[in-house]
Length: 227
Image (cartoon, rainbow, N blue to C red; front, side):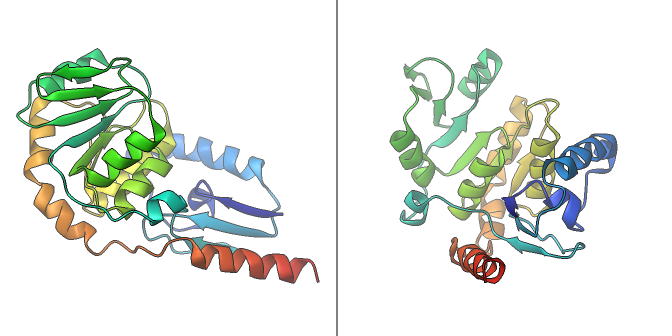
């Protein structure tokens, strides 16, 4: 068995855990160990430095979809906002800020002042991600990883009671790639927008390696374990 995921970053590496969430971290670590307790190798995905502390563990950059790898990012005018369920409070908040927003997940479409609400569209969302100047969203691993790969500063608002999202947001902020708030307000959003140049400068050094190294290691392990 070869395990490929980001959850084992918690159990197999020395990556820091937010101090106030140690109890939540302990629960997630237990579940992660139970999920794949005896893998022959662990290929751990991480967008932040994660020194290995367990044998048969190898850390790689996150897997990025080929469609993203083929895109050439550019900095447009709008900020991309994405939520997994409609949030009237967030809709009112972004309408109150002097910035143009493209918003997905609000269950509506059309222009409303400075906000363009859009219906779900994989291709449309990808194009907006490639061309936005920043992202405001929950902190799921896949979206964070693709946004950072494209060089987009990220304002993370973790889903409540989901430690993995808090963990991602914590490391994202520590690296200077964006900001992290459990509750968002106008002052915090405007502060994030004001600091976009700093985040962009930090993201210039983000390692963009694609998937080649991980796939090569996977081929090597398969060859090793089948011969």
